[in-house]
Length: 250
Image (tube, rainbow, N blue to C red; front, side):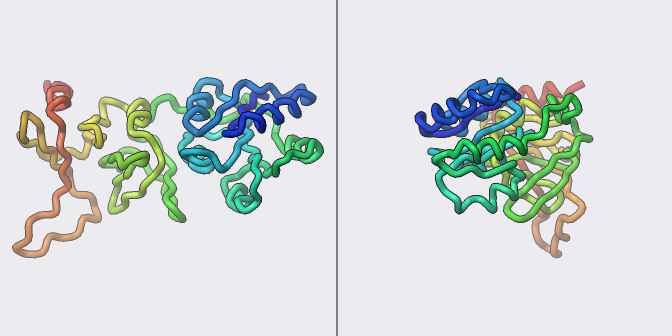
């Protein structure tokens, strides 16, 4: 079983590697000092198991898990016990406190299920009929991609707009773009990816850009008499306007 150790303390990583040497069925394939390093290693090494610290510089362990499309099994290894309830809410196998007791580590490893060829496959490309799971705070949604009108970048998060909902999820717009069908989802600008199925009108805009007006969704509030219509608009940057025209031309 391939394991990855994620902890900002180098000595803590070395201690855990030493303790795992007696477990011949565990192969440590890498170590990371923060969530960014870990996310890249997880994509590269595809580990079966994470030994994950919680409090780290930048994103913490929970934020890392939330950013993964498919998380491996997780054993939290941390110096603090106040996160235990949250750890089990994200389906962690166990929660081991530092300094690590070898017997306690062995008990945690006993909870790791054997690897199986029947594990769910990874989705290399997301198509419009695929469904995605979204969680924002206490609210959860299971959404078909064709119903998502816009993905909007807000710092390290993405605002996902569908129906009358707009949850905020921890994700990189650049990484999301790599997984979306480019014939359906178009990178309109640095901040936006739009679903071309929702485009209603296109108008010239400043500096050679375009302004895209989207179709109203089924829960769009009715426009009061005399008021301007409530239209959702997205600007296509000048840089992307030529690609946009080419993609939608005969």
